[in-house]
Length: 283
Image (cartoon, rainbow, N blue to C red):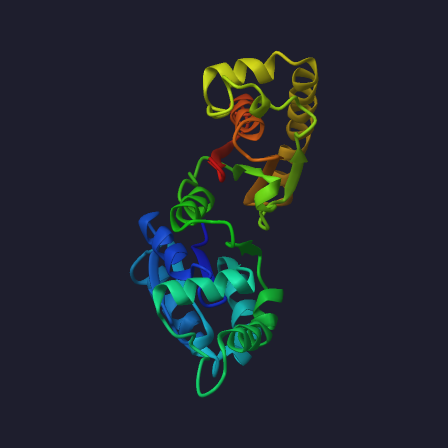
């Protein structure tokens, strides 16, 4: 089996350090701020001499002098290894707030330039690398813990006996749609437990809420149809060679309906040769 290389990159303040540490905790040999021109030599040594099968590499704007060589480096890596580029980003206001909270200067901040100008300049500089990304993750609504959980669910539990990693993410539309999903389903047509006083403070993983949701005929029909669709799609994605599939299931607040549906459908698909993970972003 080819070694797996995951390159973590993106905008400063978007969570690259958290993501790289999550890879490290998932069994990857990780290195940060490695010059682009050395990536191939580094990967070759680890794969051949040290027999390391999972490698994580952090690249950011500090390597701006080497970014012009990134296209040729990625092309060579993808020929030799199972390679994925993960690009992290966030809304400008969120990034500015994070820098203020941590009291760290932006890497491009100098002289009279303000933080907004630095962020925009970095976006422009990293745009070519963003276009090469296999996954683009908007971390605006993620806490560090949630981002760590997401990266771990995507890269930490792949077993050799499994053909694909399947991740379900429940979320609330009012907090924004996750940017890293492949398939999206809206379950706001199901009656909302939030309007039932005794259920309002509970979560979709609590038995009374699940009972309320799954008693509805439209829920039963939706589960039947969604399972049928995924039963059809999963073997085709595996045949096509897709290593990761992320399914988003959203309701209004991400607290009741989407977590309940996510847990239910994940349990119904255990017969497939996939590693199934669930992430509840908003509870």
